[in-house]
Image (cartoon, rainbow, N blue to C red; front, side):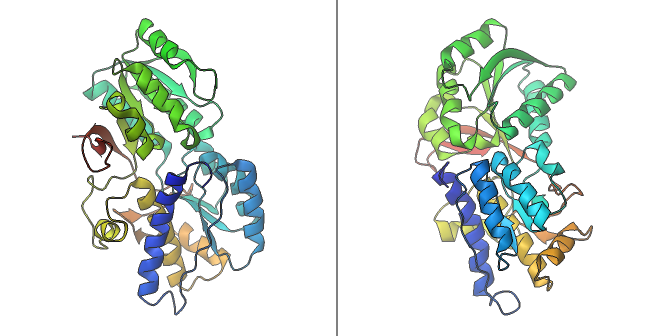
Length: 344
């Protein structure tokens, strides 16, 4: 929560929506679903400390979280060693797939983000020379940079090296954009962390719409729209879900969300909803201890209806699914003058 309060709220809405739905229907096998809210500050050290406390509390049957990949990587080994299921709705670093069989994700593999952004750039936007600004202190940012670099070369483009590290407090945004342009870049991929969205927005502001902007899912925030304004117009992001990108399915997630929260929710809420629904499904099967919950989720037959489609897991614990492309256009829904909308 301390890292980015708005993002924390987005995640909590998804969990709360499931809790409300389940408990209004009488709970699970006669028991209400109870949620404990823990703050890890998006800090891997604090996340590991939190995890140590949670694994010792026998009333905790599973964990929805953590938010940032670094926090998940910090806490994941603790859950794995103590056999407590952890399902992250938002962490997408590659290394998380190797943490063990008690670690799951309702967000798709970061490779899907990279592939979609690369194909859009090469095949649709007809751009071939892309520069990258990433955060060297964040495992997810490193993962997306590596995956995107591989994808762009495979698709026939190339990466312009400008050493643009968003973790560098002395980074001169204007110099980096000018350098990219001078070296022949026609596009720019921004991969800030959720704790440092401002660094990515600063690059966009310095760019002044000169280079086509691509963004990671972390940039899907109110802050991006409010602070970026016209400088982020036209930016293309790959995200797991968007309310206008899917039809409301049989469980009425989108309709319910609008009724409860007073407007559209974003991919973090949908993914947290899915993570909580996964745990509820395991509990409804009578799996009321940690080990049987894990066995249920690991079954090749396991699936549950999520916010948009069925949630299934690969053997790695990653979600079996993809991403969609969205862009930023003038609009009134966010009350900033700009909105995220599916890319047509």
